[in-house]
Amino acid sequence: MADIASLGVPVISDEIYHGLVYGEEEHSILEFTDNAFVLNGFSKAYAMTGWRLGYLIAPKPFIRPMQKIQQNLFISPNAFVQWAGIAALREAGPDVLRMRAIYNERRLYMLSRLREMAWAFASNLQALSTCWATLRPFPGTPTGPPLICSKRRMSGSRPASISEPTAKAICALLRQFPGKHTRGFEPHRGLPARSENS
Image (tube, rainbow, N blue to C red; front, side, top):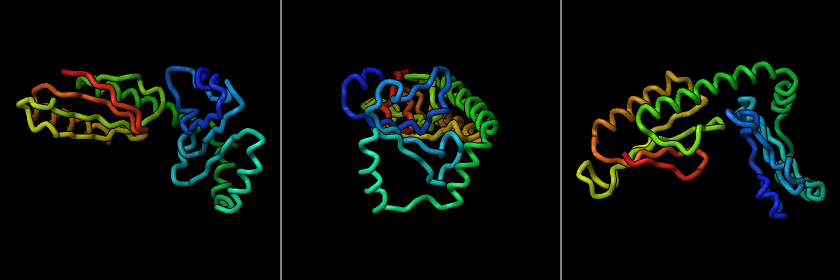
C-alpha cells in the first residue's frame, strides 16, 4: 500500500474485508495517503450481505460533487436497513468477534483439507474468502481430454459440513484422472491462480 500511495495518484481501495484478516495486521490505504477513496460496508464484517448498506470515505474536495451524483441516482437505504446498521455498530461487537473466530476455524479447515490433496497456495488466505479448487489435466497427456476442467467451490463462510462434500468430490476427480495435473487454487475475487505440478 505504501508503494501505491507513493505514486501520488488518487487511489480507490476496496476494504470490504477489513476486520476479517487473519495471521497478520490489517491495514487501510488511509494510513499512507489522504488521496484515497475507501469503499467499505456491512456485508462482510457484520454478515449483512444483501442489505446493501455501505459507505465511502473520500477526499474532502470530492464530497459535494459525489453528493450531487448520488442525489440523482438514489435517495438512501431503506429505513430499517439504516437502523440495522446502527444496531450493528452499537451492539454487535461480541457477535462479530465470535463470528470472526468461527470463520477462522473454517478458513483453517479449508486450507488443511486442500493441502491434504497436494494443492499449492500463494498465501494462507489471510482474508476470509471463497476459493475455487481447480483440476486440469496437462494438455496432450493420456489422462484425459486436454480441456477437462472441474471447479469446486469452498467458502470460509460455510460450515465444514458443507465444504467436506466438495473436498470429497475433488478427491474423486483425482482418482478418476491419476496422471499429471495442474492443481490450482483460485481466490474468488479474481486474483490469478497459483499452481503446482504433481
